[in-house]
Amino acid sequence: MYGRALLRWSRAAFDDLRQGVKEIEFLADPTAGELRIGCTGAMMEGLLPVILSRLRRHHPHLIFEVTQAFSGAPLHRELRERNVDLILGRMMMPVADDFSSEALFDEPLFVLAGVQNPWLRRRHIELAELIDEPWILPKPGTANRAVIAEIFRACNLNIPSAVVACNSVQIYKTLLANGPWLAILGVASFQFGAKNPAVKVLPVKLPALPRPVGIITLKGRMISPVAQLFIEHAREVAKPLAKRK
Image 1 (cartoon, rainbow, N blue to C red):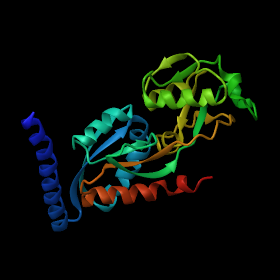
Image 2 (tube, rainbow, N blue to C red):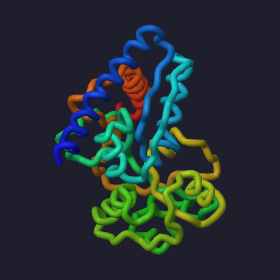
Image 3 (tube, helix red, strand yellow):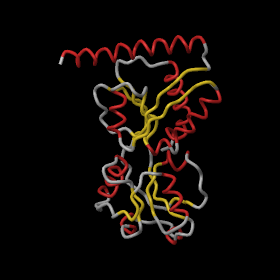
Image 4 (cartoon, one colour):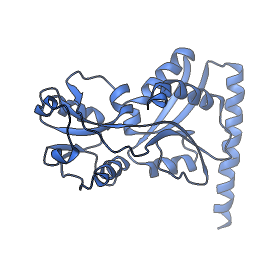
């Protein structure tokens, strides 16, 4: 019991010491440094690469270590244990008391289909009309699945059965481009991810539910200069989405 208490506080003390050493190294060479990022799958295949590429152009010697998870809980644990410096992803509100958060934008979601899908001939579609279509959905138990279930509930619908259940945005886009599938993706994945001209947005108006995407850090923990640089570049990349009505 005493040892566990000492280890818990020692971890925080040594983490602050390491952050201090990192800051000294950064002051000696502002183009260098290291950052450990926790990230959800959707951000990893969309927004995150854009931020990292922008950072790399301005600071060519930075090093990044990315930890991926498909729900917030594992990433929150990694942050509390100081295995990552910050988290980039969709934020479930309210944020825990031991975290600090900054929302970058509120992420709209779209229903997507391949260019050969006959639904693209319509100018307006109600979500209820698509219930029996072949859906690609996130795996049960993930945060993204919960978000999509909330969308259908807001339309007084049950979430449809998934013909394909997976968490890879790339698999989503490949299947959509080559078959009759439908899927729901956020703008961070669709706009910033690898472009596929064979995938289009269907004219379905989804409920305007709050879906903030942002950065979470550990409250009371010193933010390193590299982490601050990442946050500043993330704000710049997200500006067009933050201004969108």
